[in-house]
Length: 211
Image 1 (spheres, helix red, strand yellow):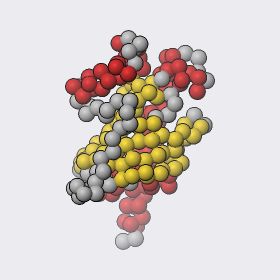
Image 2 (image 1 turned 90 degrees about the vertical axis):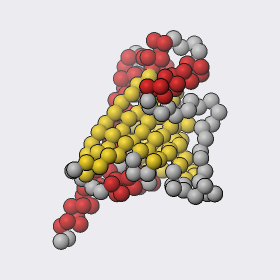
Image 3 (image 1 turned 60 degrees about the vertical axis):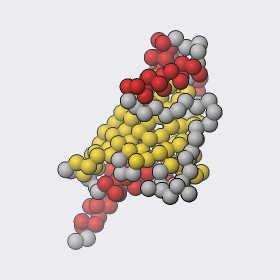
Image 4 (image 1 turned 135 degrees about the horizontal axis):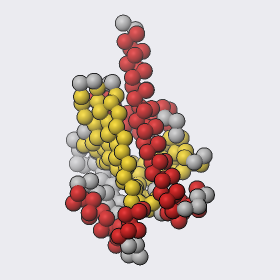
C-alpha cells in the first residue's frame, strides 16, 4: 500500500461525473449525475446515448507481468498499434493521472484520464477530458488468475455526444454515430488487450526457447 504521506488521490475536475462503482446502485447514481448535467435529455435520450461494451481474453503469463503491463501504461506506445503517446502527469502506487494520444478514424485524439487500482485485481479509470464525441467515459479492467494464465476483462461505459460524433466523423444519422463510437471503443479496447497478450506471450516463448 502506498505511504499515506506521498500518495495523492486525484480528484475529478468540477463538472465531471464521478466514476461509478459499476454495481446496479452505482450505475443508477451515475445516471442521476448525467441527468443533472443534461436536464434537457429525456430518459430515452440517455438510453440511446449511453453505451457499455466489453471484451475478455486470457493471457498465458503470470499475474505480476500482466498487471504491470496494464498499470504501467507508458509501455503501450511500444506494443500497441493505436496508442501513440502516454504522458504521466502524476502517479503513485494506487493512482494515476495521464494524457494519452490514440489513433481512431485516421485521426489523433488526446484524452486525459485518471486511474485507480487495487493492485493485481482491478484498474478503474475515468476520462476527465474525453474525445470530442464522448460526454463521459469510464471503465474498469479485471484480472483473474485461471489455470491457463490470467483472464482479463475490460468494460467501457460511455455517454455519446451524438451531434458532435456526427459532425466530427462525417456521419449522417444518430444511429450510425452511436454504432460507430460503440465499435471504436470495442476495437481499441481489444487492440490493447491483444497487444499486451502478444507481447507477454512472445516474451514467454522467447525465454522458453533459451532453455
